[in-house]
Length: 344
Image (cartoon, rainbow, N blue to C red; front, side, top):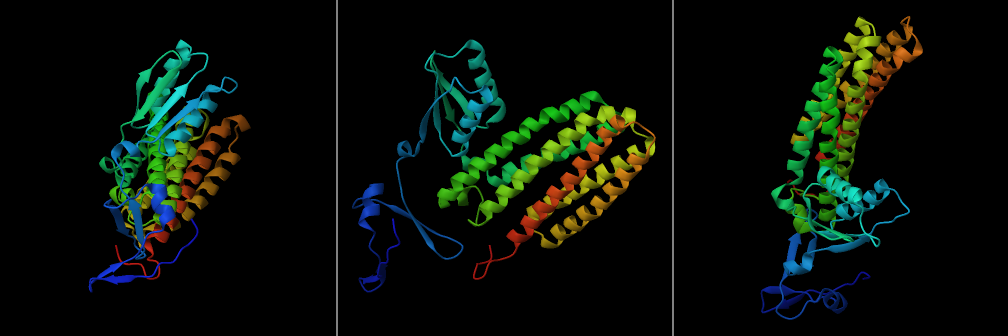
């Protein structure tokens, strides 16, 4: 609908009224006696939405699995349906599901998509339903859970460098699945909040402009998880092929990186601009420490292949620090009040 203007009328001497565009009213099914929801946003604008029955709010979709594409390609399509907020998705296989494919679909759904369950299935159909209630698990709850897992992963990855415990490294790698699950959940929440201001309030997103900021933040956190996994994967080879001095410096840088991440998360939680700036400066200092450690390892009298795990670990630690910078910068942006914006 193109922009339309309406004059405010005074009714009964004390009530302001404004007429609704008839085209909009017809499209959403508004009729005399219906209720509308009015939400005042931070910029003092009003969002008007038509209230609907719960049955009308259930979003359904059908997706025919392509036999020409791989399982991962098809599953990416399913993830897209999840992210845009469908409550019910029917997976259809025209020639029927093979037993192995059916089992794998159900396993991957449970492993990668929070709140989704298989509720019906037949030879040619699998029905997935979301039982997720956004208000029961807010945006802050999801970010807090994601942060705790990342911190524990980081701590164990650093410990695996020192102790070379294969089981510890493997546990870090397995926990990355949880990070991916929370990442997808948060993206789903943010997408839903963009089109539903009332829902945005319920999940704790007070300002619409913060949606993009949180999107950048959780993507940075997801990438931090990937680099922690890389450190864990390289730990065993590194401890057997790198000199003690270099190993000690890598471990020290790892601890510093964890401290920077902790400070970054604290600044985000409190919207603390000063602390966010400190995290950025700490990250820049760590980058210089990584350069020194790289030069030390390259100078060791070892073959190039033996140095790769250590250099790869240092690169991941530097990347984690860079992602912390990104999160801190977004925190600063979100912490600055926009012109004319009321204090939340």
